[in-house]
Length: 160
Image (cartoon, rainbow, N blue to C red; front, side, top):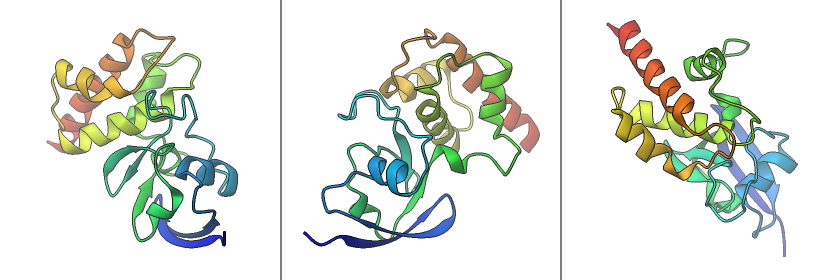
């Protein structure tokens, strides 16, 4: 099979790459483009460690073919910060120790950011529901949920 030429936008930057028709977006991000923030935890869309957004829709990059990125906008964990300045969610996760080993953290942060863009004032139940697709074997989720809720409150306060 011939490699496919894909033109897309990743983290706001026009991007082109070659891929095999069967390659996943996760494989291309990590192996071809050097964006190793997204992790492969399961390869079956069950753990959320590879979460990215596709046109602002949360997807598991291990289930997405890289060819599907053609003409779309992808956002990864590498696109959350503004240069050296951490995104408020990233900063709050550090401040509240809402992470441990770090395998799930990129996916959780991408998912939480997608939630706050859709709903800047989520309830605890909504945060737990939204993040249900992200498995963490270390933290027990409470610190993660608190960090998301505190960030939402901080962002709402800054907008007022």
